[in-house]
Image (cartoon, rainbow, N blue to C red):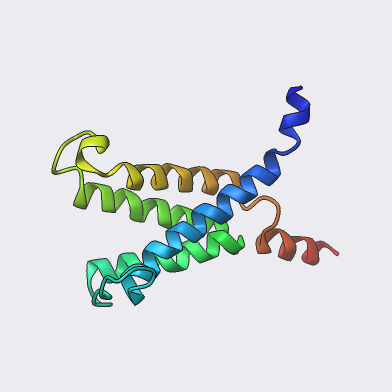
Length: 132
C-alpha cells in the first residue's frame, strides 16, 4: 500500500511548490499593486516594499520552478525576518502573536530549498536540455 501512495510523492511535492509559491506571490502583489484586495500599495522603497518584491519574485520563481533553491532560501529568510520583526516581540508563541503563517512559510520554503525543484519545474526542464 505504501508504494502505491508514495509513487505520487513527486506530484504532491510539485503541487505544494506551485500552490505555496502562488499564494506567496499574492502576498507580494497585494503589497506592491494592491491586488488582490483593496489595500493601497505600499511605498516601494520601504521595508514592506522590499518584502513585497521578495514575496512576488520569490513566489513566482518557486511556482514556476526557476532558480527554485535560491528563491526558496531567500524567501525562507524573508519570512524569518518578518516573524522576528513583526510578531515575536508581541508574544513568544506564534499562535498568540499571529505569526504562524510566517513560521509555516519559513519552514515550507526551507524544505523546498533542501528538496530542490522536483518535477514540473523550469529548473528540471533546463537541466534535461543541457544533458541532451
